[in-house]
Length: 70
View 1 (tube, rainbow, N blue to C red):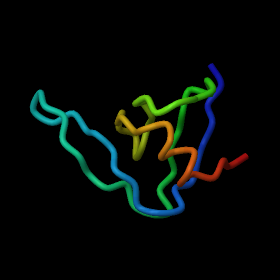
View 2: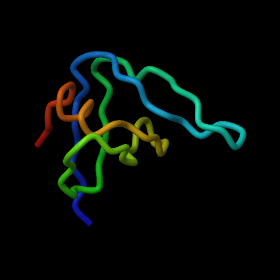
View 3: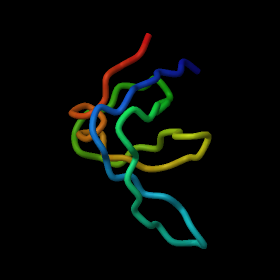
């Protein structure tokens, strides 16, 4: 499966699974996010990898605050 990488240009909220619950944390500017390479549209939550952890981010946040890295 192709993997795409994005650099976050401004702090962005993500949902983390902790002790069976989703909690929010801020992904800092400069963080590298990996996606599964599928196109992302709309406002849905999508699973991405950050710092080798699976987290959920809104597709609109990734489009607005992420820059694709080749």
